Length: 185
Ligand SMILES: C[S@@+](CC[C@H](N)C(=O)[O-])C[C@H]1O[C@@H](n2cnc3c(N)ncnc32)[C@H](O)[C@@H]1O
Image 1 (tube, helix red, strand yellow):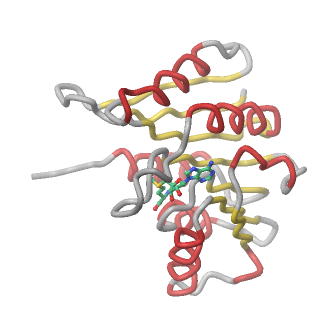
Image 2: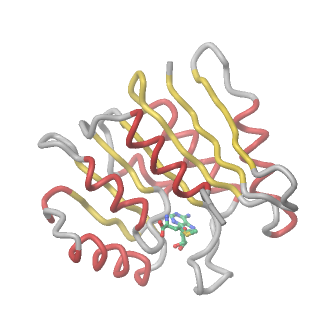
């Protein structure tokens, strides 16, 4: 049976809509899969930042990037919450990826939270360059959907003249994850 998960769709969006120049950000590094996709796209002037609150996640991300021979000068891993992104990145952002929730097979208590996720979005959105993108995978089935509803409400209130926002979900699947794509016009 063919399966085309939302994570893979997010990777395709980043590949198709950006050219590897400028600043890329993995807002939730986890096991590094999103970081690897962005790191492979980078051209000479591109740089990847990856954030996570768990050292284990950054270790996993470093291992994956190293295994794939990614130049260590092209990325910076930050053990910090993504809501502090403004302390590290001052330049315009080309792409930011979120995969919300917890580390697969990890401690479910160390999950993203609605307050810090929305706080980080409020910092990333004004830094997006024209044509820059954000992808977010959110999980209505986690913790009663609190974080999902907070993200959905926040995105729904953004001005359509500034941001083109779409959402993808699997029909017929209870608590399907949702993939958002935000493009700065
Ligand atoms: C679903 S996983 C990410 C999967 C990852 N993108 C990948 O490709 O493997 C979610 C990650 O978010 C991290 N996280 C939780 N709260 C965070 C925060 N405030 N800032 C940054 N990362 C956070 C968790 O530690 C976890 O590793």
